[in-house]
Structures are given as C-alpha cells and as structure tokens.
Length: 72
Image (cartoon, rainbow, N blue to C red):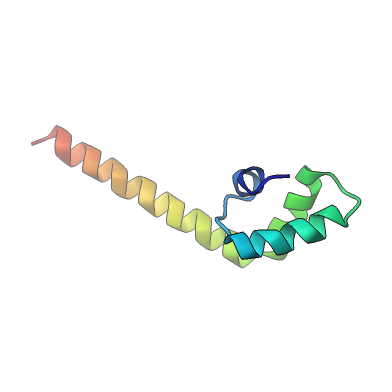
C-alpha cells in the first residue's frame, strides 16, 4: 500500500517517517489494506475525528468565500 492509498483511506495526513512505521506494521500483518486502515482509524479515533472536523471547517470556509464572491 502506498502512502497516498493510506491517506485516502484514513483521511489523515501523516509524515513520511510516520508512514514508514505504519507500512512496516502493515507489511507484517495478515490483513488486507482496507481492514488494516479500518483498524488504524479505530486505534486513532481522536486524531481522525479532529482531521475530519478540520476538513469540514475548511470546506465550510471555502463555501462562504464562494458565496461572498458571488454577491460582490
């Protein structure tokens, strides 16, 4: 699994160093990438929720910028 595949599945950006550690664990596991990512999300619930909240806030901010631009 590539870093890009991982981040798309878990919706969290990780550093290269962190991904290398994640990849090592994944390579030594006996589950497929989807199951591994589900387990990672479950183990990192707080971090994932924070990332989702930040993404939602950013989307809402961009929507407001678009609306404000439209009404100028």
